[in-house]
Length: 179
Image (cartoon, rainbow, N blue to C red; front, top):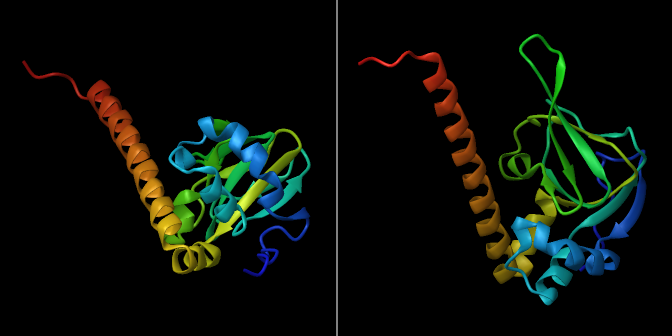
């Protein structure tokens, strides 16, 4: 397989090549990566050959809310703050993510604009899987491709259930109980 090309999304960042040299680190943090918990070493090595890695300095905005997106990130080293604009346009921190977390899965799947921004809180090394390489992975390695799609589906479903639960709790707090 040819090496993945540098995506236009990160022209200002240091391009580190494909993720194959980072397989050992990915395997070290795999217990923290829900998305890849059912993958064996060989499958991770194959997947890594479809991903490209970058290094970003602290303070870099690696995902911007509202931008188009067709890729997800796997954080290998460092951390990010996840920021979301409120209804008045003011950014608020909604979370943090560190090594072993994935970001951008929704846009990888549906191509819709980014839901939130992600800012590097320290030097960051991350791997990118874009839709083009996911499609190629599915065609060339169907077993791994189906496995990653199923894991993405389960991850997104878990997030949807969590958000639905939070929404119901908010609604229950707002509505007085009728006795």
